[in-house]
Length: 79
Image 1: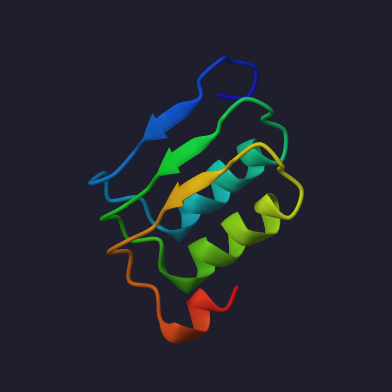
Image 2 (image 1 turned 135 degrees about the vertical axis):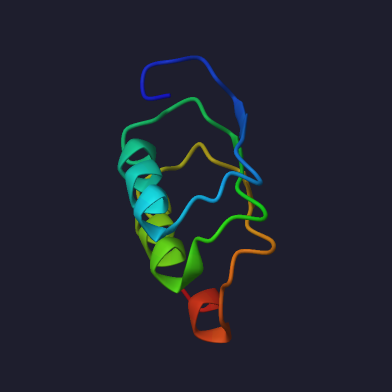
């Protein structure tokens, strides 16, 4: 997804963990086309959300991010 034209990506229900979220975050640092990323019902946890939040501080093209049902605590929401 780094150099592709994909505008929307749905990866819900894939058992993605914080490690997978970290890999996705690295891609988001360089992606300039993805506008929607749906990660609902995975296992991202607080660490995964932190990785994504850091990437999104650089990525300005992603407009929608679905994170429901991902074992995120109140502390994780603050990222």
